[in-house]
Image (cartoon, one colour):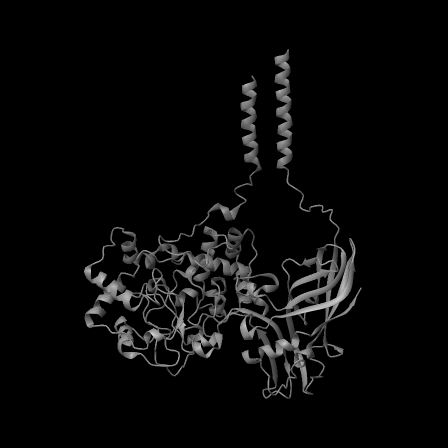
Length: 253
Length: 346
């Protein structure tokens, strides 16, 4: 009798293990239920030319030097976005590479999800693509070289690009392609903007950023288009220093 | 009875564990893996496929792309047009190659082998990664003059390619990154390491050097080894070797860095496979090894960026030149230029 019980128990145990094994084999659901509280932030960008909203191939604008110009292309990378909380915690967006193109409205807003709540004080990012991704081989997504923001003969991304026309240019054109990720021709610039950005669980906040294209032509150096109609390696630093402060936070809602 | 059940249990457990594994038919990438072998005694390569899983399917896709003229604007020129296997993947008898519409550039088509050890690409080193190499000739107006965007569109419209992308990457999506990674699988696998010299170093049959070859090896060590370093026979540096500038006045490395110190510097070519890869130098100005050696003994042009090691030129007797040539001949790898693995698929 005791022997039979033992066998039965073994059988039962065996069945239980079988069930456990079957459960272990069941595919996990694709969405993991995360109990950590998070919110999300939409970055919404509006490009400006001075005080006016930028219109490509349309309006004539005046730069700091008084040169008239029309803008036809205005593109730049925003990458490595970080949000700093009042307690010092820093949220870093994973795979943070965003190509913003004025002629494509879908590129002018994007969402950062899974941000732990709290009182954020600063948003910081890079204009351009970090040196690592410039030397790490073929990339995809916003870093696809087919975007027109990549130099194939001298590997590297065009960090920011402004094209247009101006009567002040001897050839009539303005071609500012800013690239390079090291040394004197490093076109990467860092931006840090402060504003109270309180974010609670399951909340969605919009950070409205303004980027002023005319900042490329002023502070710290006033650009005369007759002197720089096409950016060369020598003028890369001057223009990049100028565009470093083209961003501001318009408002948060 | 108990023991029987235990055995059944153990067996069932094994069966269960097996059942937990993914269906092997679904795992295309792992189906036929490919291994990149580092030849004995060679340093670790610069590119090691850590972000690009090697597979037979990826390699075959890269091979098809390499020989496909549709990668050019008018569908006439493939990579293989100017990088021919019998010529060590250079182009014999062409100082510069003909691109689309017979346009020509300024530089000699470089041979392609042992690329995974290279730290940069092109004579001026403008390309910093093997995966970024193919896009340059594809988009160069005097080479293939096509856009990578159009290449993606052309390949997406081809059912054979779509199935090959699926086999290599798991689905039919064609993009520039996958094209680049497939290229790197094919081109990086092109290794030349079976010349007589290699057999000599490994102590293999067929590797016994003659006295003349041994003498030549010593002359090489005294005169060439600093820059054409063993076992790859290049140190991948950029140097001005004293060639008189031509009317083209190619600034070389300075074209990329814009540094005055880099004017007339070019990337160090390997001494392997010279038999197949003539003409020589960045502009293909020399047809023979004799011309090259005469340059180093009597032709050095002084300039501010001339490599200091060459400022006095080389001193070689006629016999030493013959011995050196005998050694250089041991660097020709017949197996490599005839390896069917690298040929265009029939």
